[in-house]
Length: 260
Image 1 (cartoon, one colour):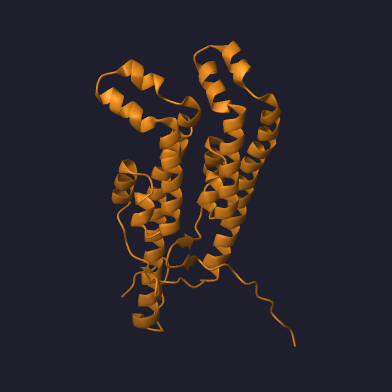
Image 2 (cartoon, helix red, strand yellow; image 1 turned 90 degrees about the horizontal axis):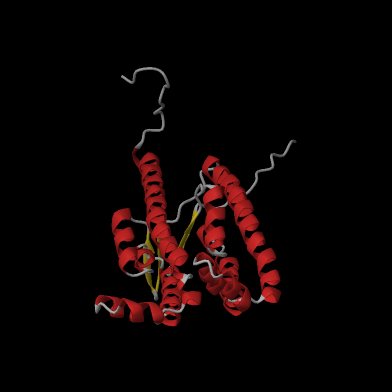
């Protein structure tokens, strides 16, 4: 008797009280680009949170102690001697291999997960809709991507909070506070509002300020795109529910012909 071996496929989502991880198609080039902008962010988009967090901590520590961001600022304004003077080349040699690895690994991970997604779709893997215990409740629901984007614009992390991704939102908020505090960004904004442009510029710590743009725009991108993907997953779950409970078993769609 012949035996048919069936390969187990990944579930299309993991729904918990504090977070929701979903499996969907991603452009590997986009994932790699976010790793170029800030090591670890590409892995966060793939759902590799521990790996991404490790790369983010590595980036912040090595970048800060090597004065890479500050050296970049000096090079932007054409002060090459000052850039060379503050740059720690010994740490920079440690920085480059991990930086390139993060780009390569995020691209490879995106390609592999796209393959797993296609297998899960063809196998019609289950979609979890509810999660509830004494800590709270989480469920798939249709949300507005524009609202997620707007909340993320005001304060990074609120877009994820709107998606019921509590752990991701606190992770984002933690790093946002660290970057704003050590860069003195809030103080610079206050001085700028008061019209004191010179003091607003002097108070800024450029080493920490350069962390903010990549991280901030990443939160906007993640809030908007993840809400769209969650809506797609919700629509698939609803379609399967209606098909299993209300569609007649003898119903078939004839491609290329009229349905009477």
